[in-house]
Amino acid sequence: MTEMGNQSIRPLVAGASLALFLTFTINGFAAGKLQIEREIALDSTKPVPVSISGFSGEVRQVLAFDLEVMGCRIVGEDQAAYQVTGQFTGRLEGYLRAGEKYLLSKAFTGAAPRALAHAFADEVVEQIHGVKGIARGRIVFKNRTQRSGEIYVADYDGHNAMPVTRDGNIVAAPAWGPNNSRLYYTSYVRGNPDIYVQEYATGKRQTLIRFAGSNLTPVPSPDGRRLAMVLSKGGSPNLFVSDINGQDLRQLTRVKAGVSTPTWSPDSRWICYVSRETGPARLFKIRVDGGGAQRIQTVGVYNCTEPDWSPDGKTIAFTTQRGGFQLCTVPADGGQVEQLVAGEDPSWAANSRTIMFVKRRSDQSYYLSLLDVPTKQVKDVPLSLGNASQPAWAR
Amino acid sequence: MKKAVSLKLFVACLAVVVATTGCRTKRPDKNITPIPGVSGVDVEGPGAGGTLDDGVGNTPAIDPGRSVLDGGLPGGYQDSGFGGTGTTSLPPIEPLPIPRPMVDSGNDGTADMAYDIDGETGMSKDTGAFAANTVYFGYDSSVVRSAEIVKLDEVIQILRTQSQYKIIIEGHCDERGTEEYNRSLGERRANSIRDHLMNAGIGAERIRTLSYGEDKPKDFGHDEAAWAQNRRGEFILLKPRR
Image 1 (tube, rainbow over the protein chains, first blue to last red):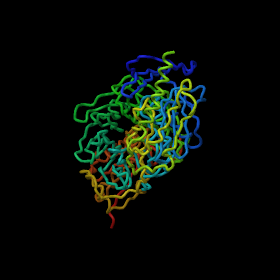
Image 2 (image 1 turned 90 degrees about the vertical axis):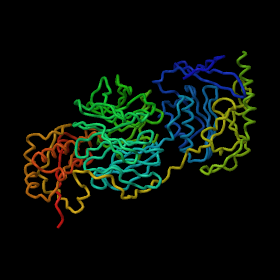
Image 3 (image 1 turned 90 degrees about the horizontal axis):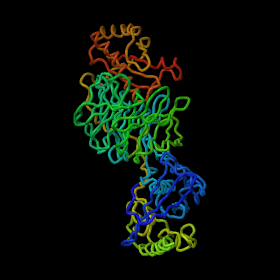
Image 4 (image 1 turned 180 degrees about the vertical axis):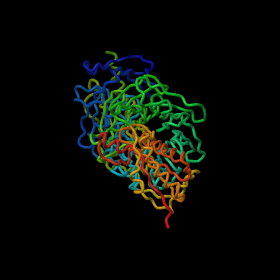
């Protein structure tokens, strides 16, 4: 958090037991513009205590869920560093205070109550953390039945879930395309795992890649120009890249032991993937425009799969397997691994802070959950579908 | 307390600024339905008439004069005081379009050179022919164990004598790997079996590998006995239809 030319500082102890200080710097009053820059010096691994009053029912539930997902903890007003107040009467009037200071005062209308609450929660979180909230995000995922499955989209909290395929066949690894207007995925509907692209709004679908063998994990680059994928094409599964329409296909790796699960760097120049070329599954990265593969060191763990590169480029989340599955992060250039929580298949939200991931029930069915990485708080997604996995955020 | 005085001044000025920015041009936004009865009604914040810092000035009120239908991006933020005052509309909330079921356009990717998938349309699938020849694998392994290799002899024999036949090798995994890792592992298992068939002289154009990863377990249990059944390669014999 930056500090701007501070003339006067007025510390406000919001709760000594919380070891949390809010400092307001009033910057002067020039050209009708007054800026307050607050500086929060707090332990970022601890959830921020926030109270909610004035709201009830669904709106309150949504606010509480969103804030808890994004690193807050809902407490009584007297213990809160920030107070969320307001009312909902068809339109949502929302305020955010830190003690006596009003940080936010806005009305929201023009959408369903849940959407209004998500929008308010996002602004509250932006005030608290300085990073845009992700409560209005959408996800795509796979829901498996015993012998088949379908691709679904939903709000990030599992509401408004709707199928986008109705094939009654096996599907895999959905991903959002450019502008979140298209979905890429693998389906077995024509008797082979082929790669499809489907327009989200119209449902129009096209077979993009169909070679004998495996055509897996299509992942559009963040700049929307290219598609990374794993194809076997009659050999070991290897990393390929094409243009966004599946043309101009190039093979990037030639690994007999096989590769899986590519993920793009945010600048669309690198692809990180999993390879077994040196024994156990490890993370590698390769330049799209040529150059050899480089190992990404993961100090502390060796069995790594399902990498997902954070949108800010700094961190790669992945799954490791040692007995059970464990979510981990490692700096994108490699280094010491941080083990987070039990789970698999992480997907970063746009804030590079929230991760959606998959947990297994005792009967081995899957469900979706959300992790706030700094605080390690976990909130399960209240989804009524029984076997949801492979989530991907629209970013 | 000089600070307190300046703060009161700030709050007073704030009220003025909020009031003066209250009548901005409204741009209609077709995505948003206006809420009737809002305009002109003073909306007061919590503690209205109450205090913000020593009872001077009201809580920053939501600006009622400006419609919520500004249509701009979350820019309800005006320069009218501190960062968070104002009213915001929500243009980026598009109602989630109802996803349509997919419509195939029939535009295929290129076919593999070695094996013509679409040539299978004229063939029937016999899943029972080699039911006894299913090959089982070790945990996280794609090596065909020596004890399993003998099961391939019958498959090779039939393919040698019936040159019009083709074969699909399905690769499967237990549930203990991650999903796409397993799909890759299933492909490698099918590949291992195919390599044996090719070494025995069966042409690549007659063999298709098909990995299901962990998606098609043979045994739905969750113990080693079930997993051992699920780490497998199965054969589907393709015969020309008469």
